[in-house]
Image (cartoon, rainbow, N blue to C red; front, top):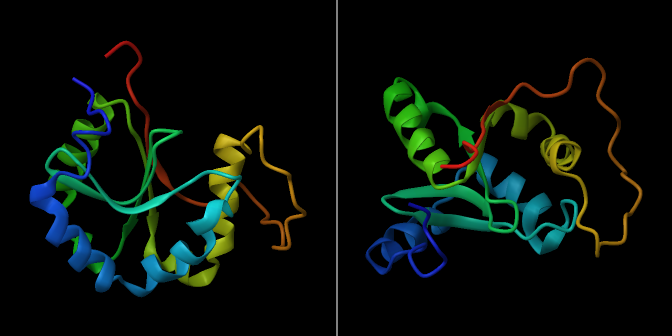
Length: 150
């Protein structure tokens, strides 16, 4: 079963989403600055999007992509995070997890990683990337791919 837009952002989660937006972590604030207004590859991201019983830190409906930031609130919640990611995967949503530390160090680098993985929207004018390139294999992130045909 896939959630359509009518079943996303359930009314019973409205106050919880609002509270999360109003009490965002520093990492969420920093990443939102580079995700909002289609600054990341021209993709539109939303903050605190609910899908079923879960609320994603950031969500791009066009890509069916959820971005989760892991900090101390996720310590020792591995089973919950895995269960949540499995549920979202069954909805056709890919979840990428980044550590808060990655965002603190360079939020633009996280946005650049998303663009490297998903490209730029076709109707978006590419602009030069002002951030320095990263050496090595890039950022450490965990990606949970949507299962094909489910």
